Length: 465
Image (cartoon, rainbow, N blue to C red; front, side):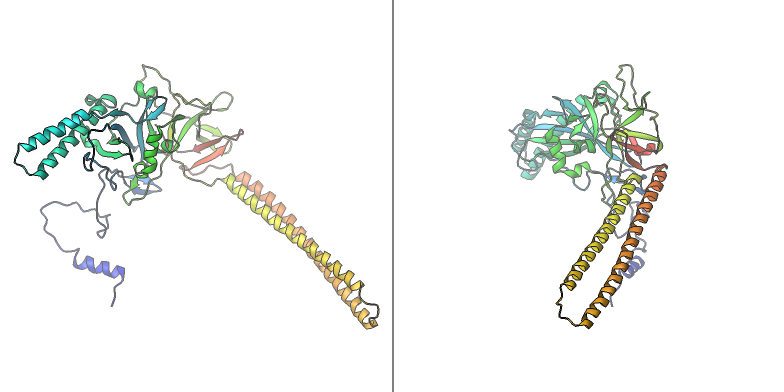
């Protein structure tokens, strides 16, 4: 006799999961975790992130661990290596978290901060460890492990030193924070000597209002900008973009269940000038200002959507220098205007079908006329009774023609009614356009110049970056 899945669960819970187990290590039981699913919490998590009223947590770079062993695979330490420092941060200021990566401007393009690895120091650390191990009685496996550790420590030391010299000074970090603990490993571009080293800068409070960030020499970009290959209309280095394209997992935050979390889109907040035209807002670059964050985002009174926050998809003036950038969580939303277009298309299809029916009825009439002509061309020597029968048939066919004509007239009347219904429905839809949408909905609309904009009522759907 076989058991159902639920019966198996009940049997296991009753006989195996209810017993008291003596364990000297204190455990914290999470009642929300299914005992049949292994519990492997991610190393980087945050709780109470709401999306569609579902509480969840995120994880990043956990399922696919980056390499942290420079000599794990055969590597020629006589070659030259280029190190790209990839500082990333998880922004948790909104209900949905999202990734940001720090880039620096170099030769009119954005790229990860980089330096040439000092291979002489790497080689010296390797050679000194080999010389030390030859004078020792340790076995070969221990000496190889010590050599690898020495090389990896020197590699990480150089990366951390560059990080402190160019990104965040050591004196600006809390005493209980060691940047070494923020090291997540590195990736290597195929067939190149380029290594991309990842550091988690979440909650490190990097001063994004210093001069380097205000002049856009440094910038934190979101994944949407990396996908579009541009930050403030300046191209991102093609090698950096290729890294993300070949390894999409480094662009994704995932829930604890492994589902990808949506990413925000880049947008630029708008206000109105005296002529009621939309304009973007820019940062005032002033040495005396230390905080140029927009505390109260401006709202625009739209004739249909009323008081709403408006964002442009591009810089309206074409000028991106010091423009205020926002991460906006936009999901596909079918607007009322799109429904109107779809309903009108359906009505047009119905009208086309009615026209086809009218055309088919006209073809039937033509065929009947041809049949009448053929009857006229019958032989003259037919008997008078046959002629009488033909006349009777002609009378019947004429009656049928009259009935078909009446049906066609009815079809024309129904098509006129459908036209009037379409006009009424379009008028009703236009009246329904003047409504306020749900608070957290982000929608797209166009102005009189056919420019597309994002609109939202909630400050929980966007944040300045």
